[in-house]
Image (cartoon, rainbow, N blue to C red):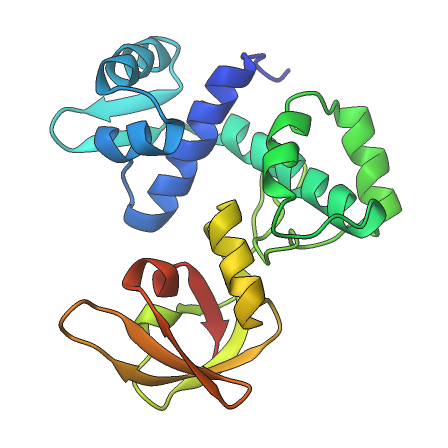
Length: 219
């Protein structure tokens, strides 16, 4: 039987999971920034999550999900990414604005609804931004890819996923035509600020290190 938690706790576990994906631990400061709350709130909530056996907090290092916390986080992510598919594939909403309403929908979708939704959508493997949709059992299959920030000059690849689903970022990438399925080549890497110059459709664009690190390509 699945452990029932509040939508707020689901949000915390989901964001801890995403931070763990990037750097193996979720640091409290970064979690506070993602959740838009103060450090005091983070400290109190993490203590409560640890008492419930959902996370392990290592002082001065960071937070890791327990196995129980990870299962819940993956279930939330599954619901979220299928909700995004519903919004873009069925309701024809633009991919750059689907993330926020999906955040609200994910908490109200029951397992029965998710089953039906998956069937109607044709059991998609990824969300509209290319991120893998976990299975009902909590499995997750990642396509082999590399962050654009790690490519060398003159290397190129096809965009397979955008890991940050911020509305402004997605709109910016849309305006450049830098979306899933597009081919992009690294032209130059700027040591001074870590930015990357890429070529897309014979047009060069400069991307900050933060933006480039959120774009994953298959070489």
